[in-house]
Length: 150
Image (cartoon, rainbow, N blue to C red):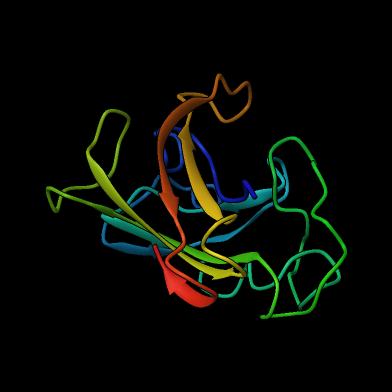
């Protein structure tokens, strides 16, 4: 499931706040970006999607689904918080400075996994959210079933 992915694993440096003003630093809470079709944040030291990704498609309350840059729809099978879903993403600056292109960041994903043998979270980044050229950053295997922060 690829959901919140904009710019260099963070919103691009030119991303305005929802009211159109430049980012002002500090922790940021994502809002739905209608132009991109995904949650995004103003420039800051961190970005949290909170409940914007909770569930998937009609399996759970995911607002604005599918929350992908390419409108790739989520699967519709399964049960909410029993079968796989990516429910939240938190990105933070390792330096404590505002996140900009080239920053080193830590990404945490809240996911519901079904079986450790089959479930992985793949992290990608791109330098341009409007025309992404995806680069694999990493892959983490779920440690079992249920809710996990990876």
